[in-house]
Length: 278
Ligand code: KIV
Image 1: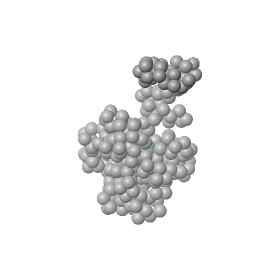
Image 2 (image 1 turned 90 degrees about the vertical axis):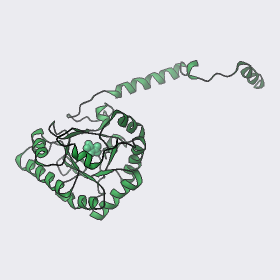
Image 3 (image 1 turned 30 degrees about the vertical axis):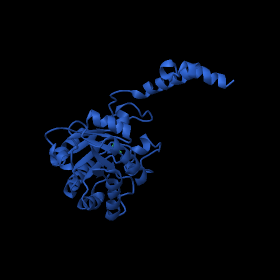
């Protein structure tokens, strides 16, 4: 059954929340049948699937194209669309228009925005227009340059306090959940205990109200870079390469396709065709 934003909120202190990224229909179908609370079409799409060096180049059109595919594969799972860089920062009106595109053109159920106080006006505007919003603080990849790179955030008292302040401001603005990325588990614990909005951690320890991972990391499909907080539940990339090498070897040696993977013809028709070809 597809969960709603209030149903996700109601899970706080009752049951842990699960979320995974999805970028296409076939993965979405598998993830829905395995069972997770939410699917996130993350702008990690840019690095994991589209081959960019960061999430910054990802466009609204690319996000919508992939979100629509995920929606077709997983019609019964809550779907969150990640607002790409500069799709919500220019003005609250721009934020409403782009969130609206996610809803109207791909069938998303919520959107996610990176940032703290600076995005609260956009968050309020999107919610006022009728669309649920998920927040995202800590390591925010779209602005990693400003943070000094892909580094753990909130390690000292001042930056931890700032994160707590941002979480409270986002709660006040009305988000239904907040992703906490790459922050010490003790800071995530204090934030999670200080707000009634569920927190969803990635590299933020066990005290969050839920967890999210990039599916390709969990499955060992993205070999370029694996963050230390990722747990690989299976390592599929070597298996895929092995299968592809076997295919290539069998084609080269003429052992594929064999009889079991070909269509037979009636013997007499085959003889006639061979004679006509003479
Ligand atoms: O883009 C993404 O996949 C994300 C998750 C890592 C939370 O924002």
